[in-house]
Image (tube, rainbow, N blue to C red; front, top):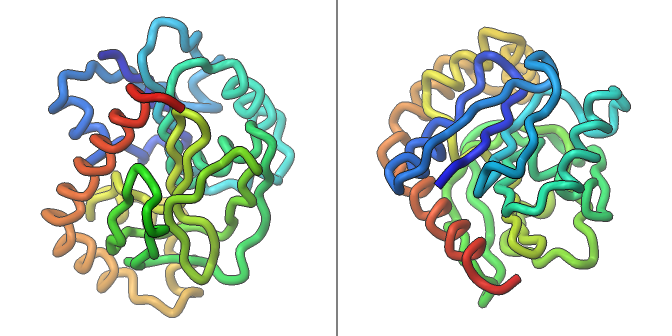
Length: 222
C-alpha cells in the first residue's frame, strides 16, 4: 500500500495517522506544498492524505487553486484533514467560509446517528478558523455547534479536526506562528501542550480507528 502525504509546513507531520497507515503495511511518501515544487502524479499511489495549513482556502493564492485542481484529478481515495478537508469540499462543488468562532483545543463532536463510517465523538484536537460548506453529494458523519466536523465524498473521507497531532507537533505549530491564535482563543499554550501530551495514548487509538474506518470506506462502494 502506497500513500502520498501532502503537507504544507515543514513542522507538519502525518503523526498518528501516518503511524496507523505504516502499521497497516503502508509506505509513505511525503510532499511539501507549495515549497516542494509541483505536486506529484498521484497515479503510483493507492491513497492520498492531505494535511492542514495555516492559510484559508479562500485566500486566492495560485498554489491553493492549483492544489484544488490537482485534487480534482485524483482518482484514488483521499483522507483530508482540516485544510485538506476544506480543499476537498471546494474541489467537489462545496465551499469554505469563515467559522463563527475559531476552534482551538480539545473538542468533542456529535456523530450523526447511523452514519457510516462511524466517527468517534473524541475529544479531537481543533485548530482552525474556517469551516466547510459541504457539497450536496457529501454525507455528513459528525457535527458540532461550529459546523460540519466529518463527511464523506464517494470514497473520500474528510475531517475538520486533527487526528494526527501529538504534543511535539502542536508545540511546533505554536513556535511557528500559532502562539497568538492560542492566546486570542483565551488559552494558555503550555496548558494546551500538556493536555495534548496527556491525550496522546487515547488520541493515537482514535487515529487508528479513524484510519481503519477510512480504509474500509475506500475499499467499499461509494
